[in-house]
Image 1 (cartoon, rainbow, N blue to C red):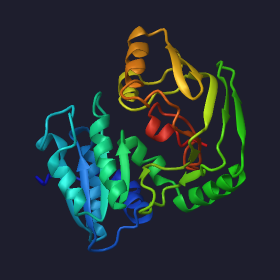
Image 2 (cartoon, rainbow, N blue to C red):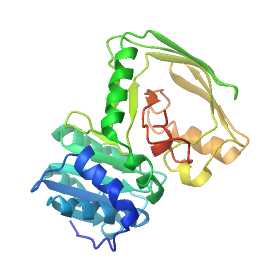
Image 3 (cartoon, one colour):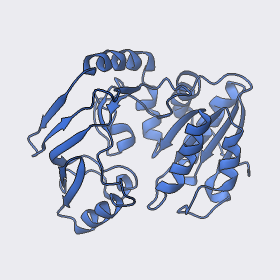
Length: 290
């Protein structure tokens, strides 16, 4: 793998980076760490590299643009080979249209090898100074309490002034899982973290997405308060998507039909990151807002 010079360290990002490396991933001296980044995330990656060096990790870093053209048609072989020998992986990159399969290939290795892994897709310097500065011990404590309260829940009804009205039914055999920032080999996690989630048995009704749609939609469309996506869901599957912006409607519908299960509601979650107080238009952090 081509090693990258990630550049100077922004001191404002060091606290969040050390939180990621020391608290969230629990990296120990000598552990093999693969840090995968891209040009838009170089500043964040430099702070993470600094934190890894302070922790005396045996880390290797690369910039995706040095080894493959963007958008990625698949995960670069160099990245996959490096992860096969790693104890810990970190991915910080800007999402681009069409790159979901490449990221899924990376996660597939992580899950098969059960290595500790931080998925920081869409991370920004702003996020490093907000959600990544949270006290994850407190986030974990809240997540545990919420998970205990949700245990055995059979259904949920959600209604908002914006027009959302849906019901969700839960399968008691499917656990409520916490991703509270304390990453283990069993569960990799997005960072910043702070969620308690499950896969609903079914969802029916209307969901008005007036925040952000996530993935590459964050940067392209931003805050959706003025042009919300109105999603109709039946039996846990998306049946229609309507929006004043025809381009967003068309692109979102195509995204939700990437494969046979892309139109399925795969997760229902509650945010538990106590370091957050408002949405910023980036789903990586916004979905963790309590």
